[in-house]
Image 1 (cartoon, rainbow, N blue to C red):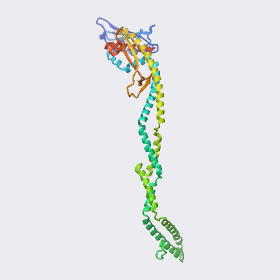
Image 2 (cartoon, rainbow, N blue to C red):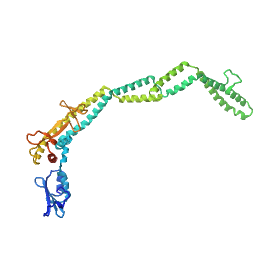
Image 3 (tube, one colour):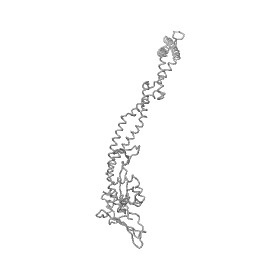
Length: 432
């Protein structure tokens, strides 16, 4: 009930009118408990303590007092949350965890550990990043080198052929023309004769140009002006036919069979096909592959200089990490000695007057193949997220007894008292 819990009339002894429970609490100067007491208007004794009182009558009515002032029961509940820790034998399980034992030291040490530990964690994060990149680059260096060789070989092969955009399509059309030169000549010759007439000037085969010319002459000589007016239009048609005839003639002159040219073009087409079989479906795709390969080569750095730069950064960060880890270890060692003395003193008031607590702070050795190993004073230690230290609470049950891990040296009830002593010491340390 003094903690603000529910008051029950059954707690009143038979024949008595009421029951009461009283507790004295020592307050810090600036902690939350002090603010609760001050806000309640309670009187604090000269030694910095305050008395809490809870009464319950036989009819079930209860009252709460704090520092001589009547207060709501909720005030006692708020105060108890700040100054009281309830322990049972199940709490001993916390002491079996190395991380919890290390956390006890760090809570007691405060800023002397928190400051260098924060710096250690910042450097460690970058150190791990560099380690991972260096490991990846080293393990993949052969693969990356092979990839780079393939890209370089491909670019050399493509540059040797030096294809032009769309060249494969143009060559296909040119080969079609060269391979079908006879058929094309016959087509062009017949078209030329139909436009310009026979090559030997046969009057029976004047061609379209001759026929239109004859029509122009007849219309120009007609007496009817309507007919004469049609002549200029036919003259335009005659000029167009003349141009087409001339172009067909030029086409025939340049269409001479050239076996050497065909062979050359076929050889060029074969070179392009070797590229399209290996790199892309067409020449434009091959050129795109080459552009992408050059870009990828720029990002693939397998040089010894890059690995050496990463290794140097790793060593630089490791040196910084050693400095921060050493500072954390030193602060923990100092705090461990002070904490052990304070806990031993508290145990004497908890029916464990002959018990003595020791706290060891040792560096955790790195196992074989540990990727987070750090060399400190010639020894490989594991650089974990909370430093390189292993903290262990040892208990001497009595004078002459060897120090043993606290969970082996103490019974379940004694472990609960050790936990209580630790909480009391930590509470005092927090208020300092």
